[in-house]
Image (cartoon, rainbow, N blue to C red; front, side, top):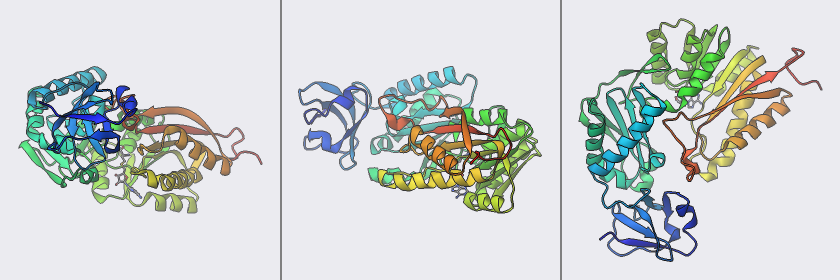
Length: 401
Ligand code: SAH
């Protein structure tokens, strides 16, 4: 028998609309004996079942629903869910061998991320319920992607601590090479799935990188927060006059240099530095760039950090606009889920107005289709990508006074 947890009156609306998290303070009672990782049923105060999910006894997210009625989260369950997830990726990104196979809640698998890089899968279990089911998940990956020869866990994300989980890294099954070559937008990247950031590569910017490649011909391009070089390499391959990538991580910069080489690009260069220092230096030296990409790490992980994140985006975009050439393009991305697109747009507009520059929105992008957005969970929509040009009819670089 699956234990039943009952919600307080009127706490069922969000969940009935499809949200998958039940917060602890929304529950009226939890039967004794229910332990972290157990399958539970959640009912409204009126006793209507809202589905089953995995319980956690201390996390603020008390239940992570699976979007239906499921008795057990075993290898068969995961195999069916992974098959559906793989079918979506085949449809949205046909012929690709590297993509996010499972994007947590959006694939109705709260707490689970799986990235596929050719014949290697890299898994993140961000909830205790998923962590306990590691073996079933490995079995399901092998069933759905029989060509896979290695499965790695990169369970070092800080959010695991909220679920009482230790940080852990290692091979779960098969063999995983230290480095492997993936192809995205026809370009090759040698990535490090065992030691690189996150799962080794940021798959979510796929489409946005292609956009940058398409507007870079003949331009001087500055790729801020370049990691292993994605935007700079697309720009260089798209015919940029020069592309310079900046990242504070020595390992990332080294990878980026090698990735440019692997693609035979001689117009891309990389520098290990703090982006804020570089933007200041460029301004001091009076240098200007035709295309500037800002793709910083998340500036806020919690609500209390949001004001500081706003200030960070303002400072960064202001510093970039200072070295943006007349008629240049500013590309400003944000992966902070707590800063919505409209807020980012307002921040950039305010800074542009202060600097007396007239920005025009050319394009807005988002996370690639292997990171779909579950409408019931705004939390799944996190990547913003805004591209502006500076309109400057008289070439003075500023609005008239
Ligand atoms: N644009 C990349 C992803 C960026 S992830 C891509 O297309 O794949 C954010 C990157 O910012 C990380 O590589 C991190 O090392 C780097 N970083 C963080 N703070 C930085 C700083 N102050 N200056 C330069 N790089 C920074």
